[in-house]
Amino acid sequence: MPLSLFSPPTVDRRTWCSAGLAMSVASVVCHSARGRDWAGHFQVGCWHIRASFPLSVDGAPYAAALRELERAAGATLRLPAPRAPVSVILLADAAGYERYVQTYFPGVPRRPALFLQAGGPGIILTYRSADWETDLRHEATHGLLHASLPFVPLWLDEGLAEYFEVKAPQRIREHPHWKPLQRRLRRGRVPSLTRLEGMTQLEQMDAADYRAAWSWVAWLLHESPQSRQTLRRYLADWAGGRPPLPLSRQLGPAAALEQRYRAFWKQSANQS
Image 1 (cartoon, rainbow, N blue to C red):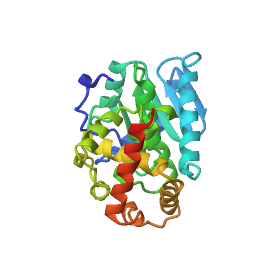
Image 2 (image 1 turned 90 degrees about the vertical axis):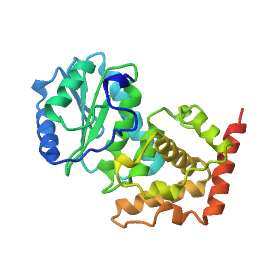
Image 3 (image 1 turned 180 degrees about the vertical axis):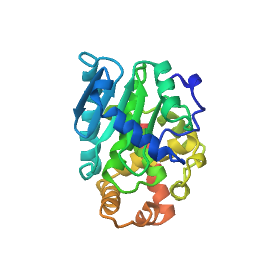
Image 4 (image 1 turned 120 degrees about the horizontal axis):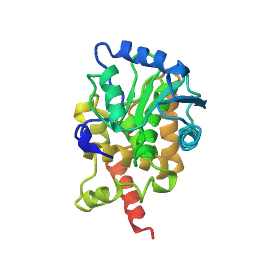
């Protein structure tokens, strides 16, 4: 990912809201819907894809990645059907992407991919690069969550995006966060779920917090059927308009929860 073109990695890639953003998003969604303005366009699942390059050959990988993500995340999390389509804008290269973002969204941080939403349909922006699939899957996870749920807590939004940005075999031991997490655990450092739950601003999260959010999501989905079901019920409550108790309060006493967390990640380190 050519981060030299963009802001430091402590700046997030999720929903950005500011004065005038709603108008900009609405303008781009309207513009993207006019297929004649794009070299390639198609729809797959909840995704409305527009590209600045022909998609007769290149479109298949993007469609496959989005289709697989929608299937996997929906089945894993038991999400309701998306309430609205998500626009996906694919630019040919970094220079074209930067021009597009600066034209329509000059106030947002400069990142290799963005998900933006302001009171209406979401929009994903990215470009062809060596890391296009990771970037697209990350932002598309945000898009799917916000199209399916009325609210997603910041830490969970980011933790799920980090989890689903890679394919299934890479989500635990092969994830880039796995080795740094193991080093911290060997030093006796367990990330606080309660602290993550208290974060409401993007600026509060740094690289360690993204790793911590991923680790708790992975723990919830893989520690036991009970932990997975707790996460699913939590999301179902949001979907049904019933703001749930924080997950840290649903998972039992803090000391016991920390012990279960340590045991899971120790077991993952001992697996061949």
